[in-house]
Amino acid sequence: MQQGRVIGSADATIKHPSMQGRKLLIVQPRLTDNTPDGDPILAVDCIGAGISDDVMMTSDGARRLLNVDVTPVRWTIIGIQD
Image (tube, one colour):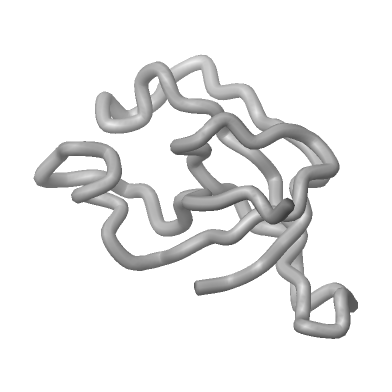
């Protein structure tokens, strides 16, 4: 699991069928002291996160979360920090 902050969104004219109807968000990973941890990543939103939300992401279980057998998705947003 990785923490991060949503810093933007992305649009795609063509998406893999497993991503249809899902938002693509650009997330800046963060360390526990809230400093940036590497380059921003693209994550599929499964819960309705928005720009400037602090989120939790996972690279495990994308197929289960998206209900598909095959997907190119690596990161999915699974929680919004209160």
